[in-house]
Image (cartoon, rainbow, N blue to C red; front, side, top):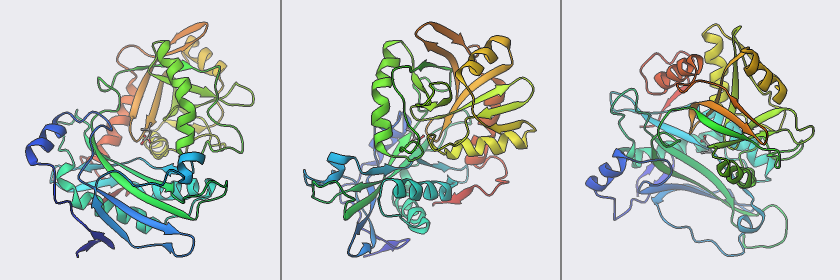
Length: 367
Ligand code: COI
């Protein structure tokens, strides 16, 4: 049996045929198709982490009493693999995802996976399924292989306590732009009925429960014709936090670029952190601080705020066109989105796709 990065390779006997794979890669959408394999590592309280494997992609066999199904003891990550012009495949700041995965694990009382195994699992899976990494047809096309590491509590037990059996997997999905129609300004519904996170809660962790709790608000957004929902803080309903799955940035006409500070209720986005760095590189003045909904509204009205954008691994940088609430519609950009967001987006993608020098040492080769 061969192995890669310490992961035993158990290749599928029924790989997707090349014609079908190419058809999928020509229009993958987001999160609809999956590659032929997945990585897996099992943990038990008695043995700790076992050796990993890369095995055929397929349904999991879970006991109906597995605690993840009842108490949502689960965490995940989002990482992308990018094909460069010379055919090599790279990922972006995976050590940040590994560290966040550990922080999420601590909050959800799951075992921590070391960064070497986390990054090794990405390398082992992507090397096996390397033909599934799309080759972008042009600089305008942002296709990649989206990697989804996740960890679930799999012990058959209905008592409420940390699971003594846990499984870690990585699945991979060829991806185009997250929003249908590519990069165009999205409309945001300001939720007044729901909060995403409270102090002491799980807001900073990347756990499925946070996303489940955002769905009713997301449905409300859709009934108001909006693409996404923005949440305010749970204590004062005053401070802007984030969208259902993306961080927010506000560009001011005097060169400041502001994002809500990490107070424990906001996800520590890898793209967020990279935007702060790239903005500083470009001579802008990044600020991490509280930004209130009044400041957002007044800043747009007065022209002080010239752009608002959302960012995340899946969404990259997406301009916010309009903020909609019960009694207000606030136009935040013209139809083309803003120049600052566009320029940072281009710098980020140029680094990720190897089109410019990786001056911060952000890339790790996967295959
Ligand atoms: C990501 O950006 O990778 C996420 O996990 C967010 C999700 C909404 C797709």
